Length: 640
Image 1 (cartoon, rainbow, N blue to C red):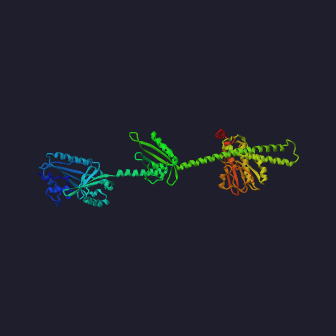
Image 2: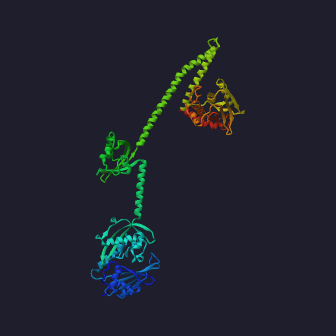
C-alpha cells in the first residue's frame, strides 16, 4: 500500500521553487507532512524535478495535461495524475509564469472504500463552498505562509492562486502594518479564544497586487493540526460601505445645516413607547440639550398654557380623521422666553390601521411672527397718517376757500368801483393788497390740492399748442413786481425759432412760476434771475431758471423733490411756503413725459431745468404716437 494513501491532510501540500534553479524556497505544513511520508526531511530541500519523481514513484502516471488559463495568458500550468497501488489518486499541479516562482500543489484523494464516497462528496462540497463564498477566504500556516486562497480572494487582492500560494501573508498587507500583524498573530496563538469575529476587531487595510490599499474587516480562526497552528481569515472589503457611510454622514451634516438655516427641525413620536425623538434643530427650538428624553407629557409642558387646549384638540382631530395636519402655537422655554412655532405632522399606521406613530416637522417662526406684527403696526400707522392727511386737506380747503372767496370778491368790488368811486387812493392800494394776498393764499391751497390730485392719480392734462416764448414772457411779467421788491432783476435768454409746445399751458406756467418764486426767494438783493429757452443737442426743449443766490448743498438736492421738504437757512422764511413747489414741478413734468433737473453749488447759485421731449413739439412726426401712452396713463389714473 502506498505511503500517500492515508495522510489525512486537511489542505493540499504546497511547495514554492525558484524558477531558474528549481531549488525549494518554501513549503506549507502539509508539504512537510508529505516530505516525511516520502522519507524526506525538510532540510533535504529536494528540487522540483526530484520531488515530482519521488511522488510519481509512489504510483503509476495515468495522465498529463497542459491546459491554457483563460484569465492570464502569461500563466502556465502542468497537471500530472498518478494512481497509487493503494487506490489513492495523486494530482500534481505545477504553475509558473515569467515573473513569478514555480508553485507545486499536490492533491491526494484517498482510495475509495465503503463509505468513502460520502467523504468525497463532503470534500467537494467544502471546495465549492469556498469558491462560492461571498467573502475572501485565505489560510496561513504557522510560518504565516498562504496555503489557501479562494476565488473571492483572487478578485479582491488581484493575485491568482498560482502567484500567491506559499508566499508570506505580508505581501497582502501595507508595509506599515506587517510587523504589527505578525505580533497580533503571535498573541492570538497564545490566547484561549479560538476565533475573533469582525465585530470584535478594528478596521484593517489590505494591499492589492497593483499596490493600492483598501479598508477591510476580518474574522480569524485558528486550529491546531499535526502539532502546528493553521489560521483562516474571512476578509471583507469595506470600500463601498465606507463610501456609503461618508455620504450618509455628509447628508446628515447637510440636512442639519439646512434645518438650522431654515429653522426647521424633524421629529418622530413612537405612540406605543411614548418616546419623542428629534433632530438637532428640534432640540434647539425646544431649548433642550440634544438627546434629552422627551415624551408627550414633557412636550405639553413646553406648550404655552394658553395654547395647550388648541394643541390637544388638533392632535385628537388628526388621529380621528387619520389625516396630516399643520398648525401654529407657542412654546415657553426654560428661560421664560416665548417662541412661535409651526408644526406639521403625518400619522403612521400598522397593517391593521392602528396609529403607531407620527412623523413631522417643527419650524421656529418667531422672527416671521415679529415681522408680521411690525408690518401690521406699520400698516396701521400708514393708514392713520393717510387719514390724517386727507382730513387735513379737507379741513384746509374748507376753512380757506370761504374767507378767500370773500376776500377776493370784496377786493374785486372795491378795486373795480362797482359800488361807487373810492375818494382816497390809498383804499385802492389796500384793496389791491387784499387781492394779491388772497391770490397767494389761493395758490397755497391749489398747491396742496394739486398734490392730492396727483397722488390720487386724478390729474388730467388739458393739452393744446402754445408758444413757449409767450408763456415765459407772461410769467416774467407776473413775477416782476416781486423781483423788484426783493431788489432783483429778471432777464430773458430766449433762442429764436423755437417750436411750439403741445401740452397743458396752465401747468407749464405753474412750473415756471414756482421756479421763479424759489429763485427770487433765495437770491439776496442785487442779484440776477435769468429765464432761458433753447433746444438741446438731444432735441429737447429746455426751460431753465438761473439765479445768483445762496445755492444748495449736493446732499440736499435729492430731498428737494419730496413733498413738504424745505432746506433750512436764514432766508428760508422770507416768504411763506408749503415746500410743495419743486415736488409739483417734477410731477407736472413727468406727466408731460419730461424731467426736472437741478444743478447748484453753495454760494454760487442754482440752475433748475425743465426738459420737454421732442414728442411735445407741435410739428414733430412722432407727436401723435409718442403722446398716446402719456394720455393713456393720465386717463387711467383719472378713471381710478
